[in-house]
Every structure is written in structure tokens, then in C-alpha cells.
Length: 244
Length: 266
Image 1: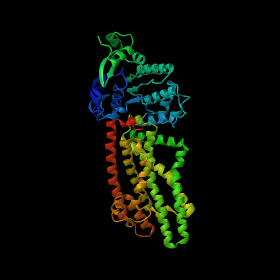
Image 2: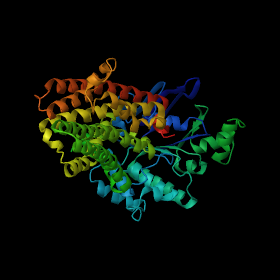
Image 3: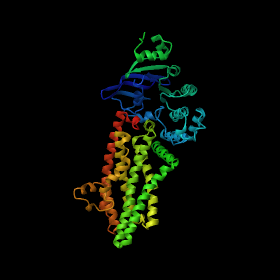
Image 4: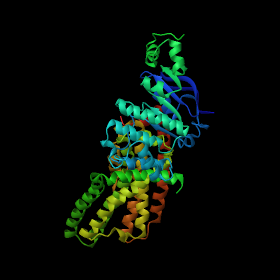
């Protein structure tokens, strides 16, 4: 069964077509990568999936719920993390997580926060204001926030942006483990090709608001005759390569 | 606790946690009402030294006006500033991808405005009693009815401000502090509506505050309870609240069309 179904999804701002009638599905329990250069339409697509942005046309169903008419039922089972949206800086990490525990109606919020603190090594951070954390610590906290409700669908917008290699690897390892244990469906927008190759079973390549290619990382490498997904990405974004 | 109440509590908890960690915010709550009380209280004391019994009633009207108008001001700012806190912390994106409904957000903002208003106005009420022997509670049950109407007026004005912020971004945030001050001349806080030029009087009568303060002056002057003013204020508040809720719903949807919920802080 598909956790996410997107049909003819379109977003237009005046004369600018940000997303152009894209279709895709994300099967339950899989991780799919959304790749593309700046302005390709990745963040716009994710915003529409989350209900933050109303599509100009098309349809989105998440976990069986139509996002146009029944988005709150889906949102309760989803979550989202992005380094570009902050948590309140003056609240401590524990207070921030408690707020979102209430918003997502998480039972035994304190116990859930303790679990996440164990898993993401947050114990030393719980009483510190969120605004005083390093970039890596903030990313771990944002990840904890996005997992507070044990989501069935997790949308991640560049989850390891600005992280050092060690912390980035820790986050990727943790995401792999979480998906294997929970069966969660993950949609990942990233510029980190190695990350996408490692985490994603399927990739959607976006350019100028359209999905210009799709397939598993291995399929894409074979189709473009390249050794790395980064080379495939450059072929597509620069228009320098042809799929076989 | 139902899921809906839990979400509302989550937003209230978020703001209470903020105030617990920020003494300047706590100080700001009581600073202006207390300052206003001092300025008008000493002015009233000056009149009292030169006045008669009638002057004492006027002083009561003046201090009652100051305190009750602060109820409206603090209620309005309580909603608008609590919403602005989400913009300042760039947290709106997280809030609106949670299952929190827009009406639950508004309910939480209103609850915060009640708490902020109480924290701001009660010290000024106590100061008026301690320094000037003016007991606002001597208005009796009428005080509650008047205060409720002024709080409701603060809420619909702030819903209008929040709608403008959704439409124009944080550039409209100055309205959160100034909009009710602009209405003050028409609210008949310190003088009766009849003092206004004839062409301004219809504007005053369209505001619940004018009816509340006319009613307050009638009670302080020992007249019969002005039910007609209370009914007019309540009806006007219902109409204005409905209009403000409609405007908020339209602007919230427009913000979702423009993608402003993610970029509104910019």
C-alpha cells in the first residue's frame, strides 16, 4: 500500500510554475529521495505534502487521507524536520519536546522524551535553552521533535545540512535503524548524494518543477553510465548527460 | 483531557515556559498599566485637592476608565504578541504542520491574553486601591460584565491585527502595540460620547468600548444599571468577533496559498 499518493500536483505563483503536474507514490515503509538543484521545487512539494502550502491543482493523499479535506487526521501521524525552521530559542530542549508532545497528543510525554534522549544522546541537553545549542545538537533535537509522535510518515528537508561528517553519519545511521524498527515511510529532500545513495531505495529527480527522472540509485547510475549519484545529479541539472 | 484541549494546553504551556525564562517579558506585562495608573492617579489627586464631591466622582470615572481600558489594551496585546512570538522564534512552520487547528491556536492565544491581562492589570488595580483609595471592585458584578466586553473587544481587534500580519508579514507588527491607541479617542474612555463632534459619534457608538464606558460612568454616578449599554456592547462584540474570525479565516487561507506560513518572519 502507498503511504503517499501525489497526482498532477501543481503550484503556480502568478506566471511562475514552481511545481508542474508531478505524480509519484511512496510505498509504506520505504525511504524515497527528492533530489534537485536550488529552485527545483523540492521544498514547495514538501510544503504542499504538509498542508503548509495549498496546491494550485492536483491531489495529495497521505495515509489514506485527502490533504485538501482531511489534513489534520494525516498530520497527527506525520512529522517533519528542517534545519530552516527553528524551535523557540529560549525554551529548554525538554520544554520544546513537551510542547510538541502535547500538540501531537503523545501519551506519557515524559517517558517518550526520556526514550528519545537515550536514543539520540540528548540527556546532557534537556535543560539547556534550544538557542544555545551547536548546529549538530540542534539537528539532533529537531530529529527528536520530529519523532515525538512516532510518525508513520516522516518528511525530512536536508536533515544533515551543516553537520560535521561524524554527526551526519550518526543521524543517517539512526534514521536507517528507526525505519527498520518502526516501518516508517520517509521522504527525504537532500543535496547530499552520498546520503541519498545510502538511505533511499528510490529517487525522484526534480528540475524546474518537474520530475525529470526516477528510479533506484543503482538504476540511475546504470542509466546515465556514471559511478556516483552526484555525477548523475550534475548531468541532469546541467543538462550535460543523456539517460541510456 | 481531550486531544483538542491538550493541543490548546500545549500552546499555553509554550508561552508560560517562555515567561518563566524571561523576566523582561514579565516586567513588561505590568510596566505600562502601572505607569498609566501612577500618572492618572496623581493627576486625579491634584484635582481632588481642588475639588468637591462631584470632583471625586469624576476622579473615580477617570481611574475606572484607565483601569478598564487597560483590560482591553492588555487583552488585545496578549493575543497579538503571543502570535508574534511564534514569528520571532521562526516556529510557525512547526506549529502549522502539527495537528493544531487554527481555532485551537486562537483559543490558546485568547487564554494567554487573559493570563497576560490579569498579570498586567491586577498590580495596577491594587496600586489604585493602595495609593488613591480607588476600589475598582466597588463597581460590583457590573465590573465583570464590563471587563468581559472589553476583553472581547481586545480579542477581535487583535484577530484583525493577526490577519494583517498574515497578509503583510512582520512589517505589520507595529499595529500590535498601536492599533487600540488609535481607537481611544472614539472609545469614550475619559469623556462621554456627547463630547465628540456629531459626525464622529456614530463611530463611537459602533465600538463596544463606548457603551461600556458610558455604562461605567452611569454606575459610578449612582444611576440605574445601564442594561441597554451592556446589551449593545455584547451585540456589537458578537458582530465584530464574527467579522474578525471571517477575516482571519480568509487571510489564513491566503497565507497557505502564498506559502507565507514558512516565510512570514522575513
